[in-house]
Every structure is written in C-alpha cells, then in structure tokens.
Image (cartoon, rainbow, N blue to C red):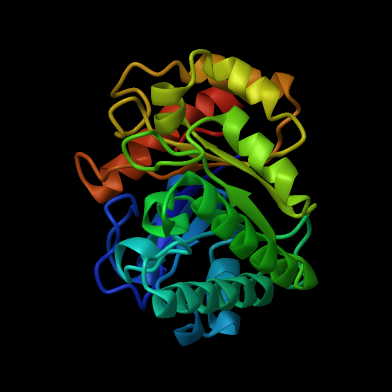
Length: 282
C-alpha cells in the first residue's frame, strides 16, 4: 500500500477544505514528496484548462504518481452534480467529468498499473432533487453507466464513495454501494472507502473492508473528527490490517480537514500512517 495526499490543481481559485498543502502547485508537489508521499490525488475544477503534459512533467520532477483525480472541486467550487435539479447543470456536470477523464488518461499515459481513478462522492448529488429515491437512483445509474463507458475507452476507472447520511441521501454504506455497483454492471466501476464516513455508517469498519474485497480501488483517510489520523478515535491499525487481509494494495489518500493547518495536516497524516504501512518516516 502507498500513501497519497489530496491537493488542488492551479485553476482551483479556492481550494476545497479537504485539499492539503500550501503554496503554488509546484510547491505543494515538492512538499508532498519531501514528507514522503508517493502520490497525490488531484482535485480539479476545470480540467480542460490544464495542460496534461505540464502536469505530468511536474509530477515526474518530484517522482510522484497521480493515482486518483477527485471530483470534489466540481461540486464544492463549481456547484456541479450529476443529479442537479437543473438539466443544463447536469449536462455541464457530465461534460466536466468527461474532461476529468481525459485529463487523467493524458497525465497517466504510459504509467504502470490498472489505470487512474476518478473518485465520485458528493459530485453525484442527492436523489431528492430528482423526485425521490426511485427516479434519483435510476438517473444516477444512467449517468454513471454513460460516464463509465466513456472512461473505459480511455483506460480510466471510477470509484464510487459511500457517504454518511448527513451528506448523502443514497449509498451510505459499503453494502449499499456494492449492490449499486453490481446493478451498473460496468467492470471499471468500483468503490472508495473513506474512514471518516466508514466510522459513522459501518457497525464494523473491518467487516466493510472484507465485504468490498476485489472491488475496493481507493481509500480516503480522515479520523473520526475528519482531522488527521491520530487526532480522533478511529482505529487505523485495525483498518490497515483489514485492508491487508482483503488483499488491498492500492493508495490511501489523505482527504481531511486542514487542521491545524494545511501543511501540518499532511505531515501528521503521514507520520501516523507510515509506520502502519511499513513506509519510511519523514
């Protein structure tokens, strides 16, 4: 397993609260590498505004991978969701997601592995805006199938994130998300587990990991208070053991509140998680 940290890309005017590290894009990459992170999860608002060749060069300069590209800024900064009540906004959300797929494919072209991941959490929206659980679920399924098929042509995967009940009105648990992914029937759609949401919704976090074996493609880190690991009460040692037992060998990405500040949060996360993963200390 490897560690990554979420950072925003240069075109994001106001970084989302869960994007870490301060300074320019190049400075954030340098800080991530200096701490010891092996990758960065890039949170983009306007993917088409970025030069993928430039992004790839900057990553290589710091010997960093980009295992995942987050849609959080599309929701937080741009107000876009796949289930937006405005049809034009739904179309814009899908177009922006396709542009993010294009960016991920171009940035990661020629790299080893199963292909980059597009993470989908709050960007999916709420089913209530579509008239309830039934119509909303159908609309979300249709949007994700279309996006998955677009992504598959580029060798890109989608990771659907169960969110806690206070932030989402559909797909709150690993079991619910697994069933939904099975309904979609697209081989390039899997799951993302976020320890902050897992702590709220799962009676047994480790059982949730076991349940997702073979479909768990990405992990977000955040303690029970959404702060860096070690500042709440979530048992990360047991969670990592469950990941190993399930055969997970992907990235664990720091997506959490910038407390006490954006740089310290990234360092605290690495310092807490590195010994659990057998990685070098900073």
